[in-house]
Image 1: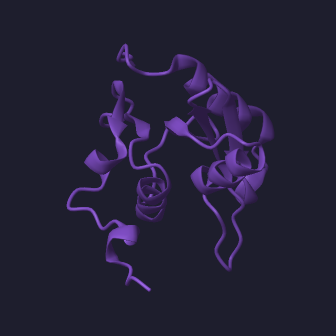
Image 2: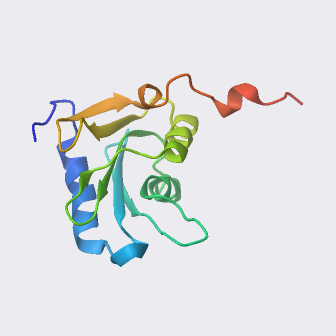
Length: 137
């Protein structure tokens, strides 16, 4: 795997370490890490449940808010069992766009391909921005 120079290697390493050390069977299979403007890294794990449950990226958004990291710049998700970097699902792409419209997401090109950081809007073309469609009081 080659790595693009814009990729935050420390961030990928943080998510990889959480996935490697904290994954617990089918309930916790994905880890994510995000870096705030101030340089702090926030990590989280998914919480799978048959009724639904938050993806690792959404857990990181909540953890960042709880820790006062309110301007996330980059995020990455990593699968357990050495699955590597995994792109965000559609729901996470929409939430990331709505919360942090300028955030970059680290993704892998193809199967085990080169890592690159891309703007969230590039992963969600012809975007729906929730705030743009709200009625005024």
